[in-house]
Image 1: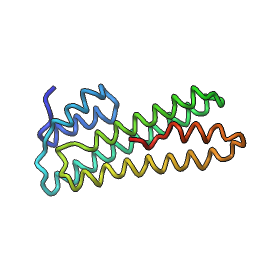
Image 2: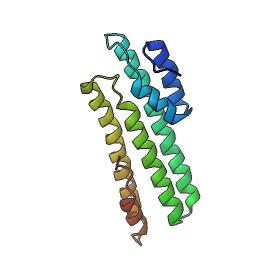
Image 3: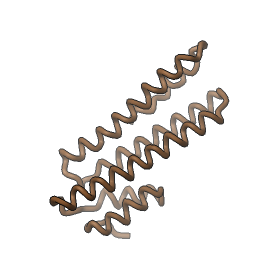
Length: 148
């Protein structure tokens, strides 16, 4: 597949990204792609991409919640769930930090992912305080999801 250059080609690539179809190839296409950043197209393109990133972010946090429920306090399972969430957030930051987007806008979009990762980390730390042993808090602090 060749790198997208038109809005319609980008829509196909963003759909593949949203549906997690061959992430590494899709990311490589996105990083090589270009688009004519003009009024109308730029807004629609940005909305599609941000919606796809938000969709995947919500999916990742839902998956994390399910994994934590199944972990039953097992340290290894908790660490694996945290690492998987961090990997997905890192991937999403790369996916939204593509050269096709002007630098000013790109920085703003990447910051959205970073802010969400920080918020998730804070929420995890706050909720872990109910564990009187401090073990869960230690695991969460030593396996941060916002190190992207």
